[in-house]
Length: 431
Image 1 (cartoon, one colour):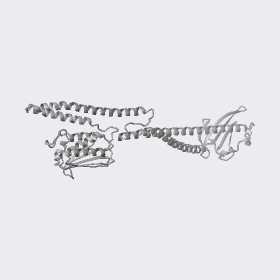
Image 2 (image 1 turned 45 degrees about the horizontal axis):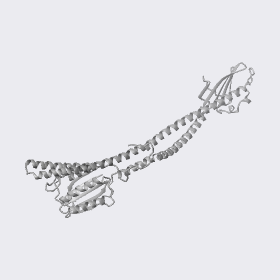
Image 3 (image 1 turned 30 degrees about the horizontal axis):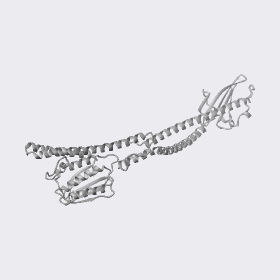
Image 4 (image 1 turned 90 degrees about the vertical axis):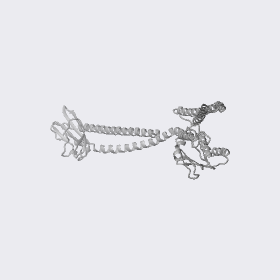
């Protein structure tokens, strides 16, 4: 399972980081290009200045007027150098001292090694003065540009990182604000599952409103279908009750023969099967919105009914008054009704019912002081139609019905000997 919020944040972080890295590289290259272009412009200007400093006098040793040469070329190893070649004579800048510039083929060469190991940008250009060719090679130390570019790039990266962080914080807040409707819907889905509400009422954005509407429609449809099913089953039970009673009376009036005995057995099987299927079909099982709000009150009423039916039995209930159960009320009453009725039938005088929450599970313990059962018979009693004693009234469906309902809720039913009353203990664990 993935988080939409995390995916948006990660996607945004990756895109912003990529954007700022590319932007930093492009800005750094552009700054370097502009800086180099500025140096080339300055070198071209100095070439023209040196060209005007030439005095056109044949065989003159003072052909270059040093007074018109910029002072930077007169300082020893200043990083600014020139070589002027005219009429087979070469004039060197004083800054070169006894060194010479490296000969190159291209008119513009970058990162040429200088007199003291500096990296030079060298520009060579040919001119014509009084029909005589003049070559001026001029160079400038660009080592400082690398350090300046590194410092600039470091500041730019720091600024980009700060901008990315600020944008991420801002975008994170925007994403959280945009996902608030989904958070509210998620909380309402939790309330719906716990039975606190029966519909999602939170206003939703237009993009997900159809989903919310469909969920509400499905919940309503499930409840209507369950209600119709229960009503139809009730009607079916009443419709079958009269014909079966008439058939039973007719059979009882007939002479007892082998055929009549078989008819009575088959009629009882039909009654048991109908009763089992009706109860099974009425089982709602876990569904959104189901919540047993007042189990303490409902169980006390149920126990009062059993006390009237079994006046000689002492039935006790021990459970938290404020306990609420995330299950269908009718299903839970079906479980307790079958188990308590079974316990009252088999007990001698006492039935104890204990309910508690343990490790996020609903634990139900029902003990009686009856004869109990053998360990080998425990699993058989949870099967449909199996009875421990045929002398007791009933169809042997009670515990099997309970077992099916509990399994519908992904729970577990176990039968064991009661450590307190020494009869049968029914243990039910529901998540």
